[in-house]
Each structure stands twice: as C-alpha cells, then as structure tokens.
Length: 202
Image 1 (cartoon, one colour):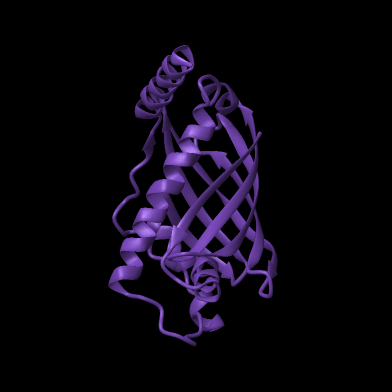
Image 2 (tube, helix red, strand yellow):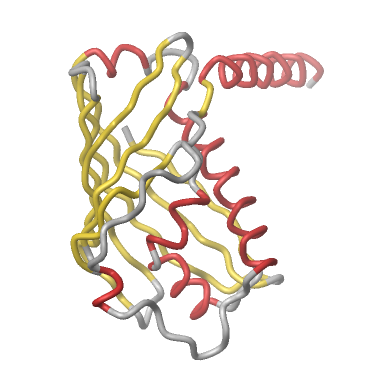
C-alpha cells in the first residue's frame, strides 16, 4: 500500500531538514508515538499506539535511516514493528524531501506500507490506513509548528552530540494518545458523500 502526504514548516529547507533528522526532538510531536531507545544517530527504537475502530493497537519496533542526502534535503527511513499482543506486524519505507515554499518549506512524504496478520484486516475499508496517515501527519505538522514557535532552531546550530544520542530515553513521559480510527471513518464517509453530491450537481 502506497500513499503520499505533505505539510509545511516555517523554516528554510536546510533548517527544516536538520529538524526532521532530529528524531528525539520530533517524536514527541507525533501522535501516539514514543521513543524508547536511541541506538545510534541512524537507529532508534520506539512504540506507536493507534486505534482502528474499536481495536487499540500498540506496535513496538525500530526506525532506521537508510539514506540521507544533505544536498537535496531528502532521506529514506525504514520502520518495522510488531503488535504487542501478537496480532500482526507493520513494515514501512518512507522517503521524504523538502522543497522551498512561500512561507518556508514544504515536506513531501511517500510511504510504502505493508501490514500482516490480523492488523491487515483491521485497516481495510473506506481508506482507513490512508485516512489514519493523513490525520497523523496533520497533527504532527501542527505540533511541530507549535514546538518551533516556542523553541526555534538557532541558525548554524548543530544537532545533539553522539554521546548524548546514545543515552536511553525516559519513557515515563506523558503517555502518547492513540489516533482514533472511529472519527476517521466518519470523516472519510462524509467526504465521500460530499464528493457524490458535488458530482451530481455537475
């Protein structure tokens, strides 16, 4: 399953790229996500909680930077996770690149997602997975912009030192709130009703 998402940040491309590579900084902006261990600057362990209808899923796994291109402000990440209750697994490869925009930068993301086990059944119907991804990205972008408004990156600032990156992450922080798939169904169905109504008027 492949899908595309995008969002904008009020930073020039070079600074926006530096921020998005700083996984410990941006994970708190991601709904339902929790960073549990920093293996090294390219490898991380974490958890993601998501609710699809009445089913609450919690994935534990790894994220790895497969490639980083500073010149083109692009990167490729690989994520693998398994549901804590053994109901399946998720594997994803996400590529993103940053383009200049009127108010800063536009981040374009292409995701190739594969689900297995029972979780593959939970995510079927009315574009559930695409709608979940869209809502997560939207909330992530809003949270990131709010974070940047409070603590904008300083020009020329470097990311954390390797010795700091190797430290384990305190998982006792505020628990992440899972994205609700029930509200997503309502949004998707409503958008389709509107689309059919508009089509009928043409």
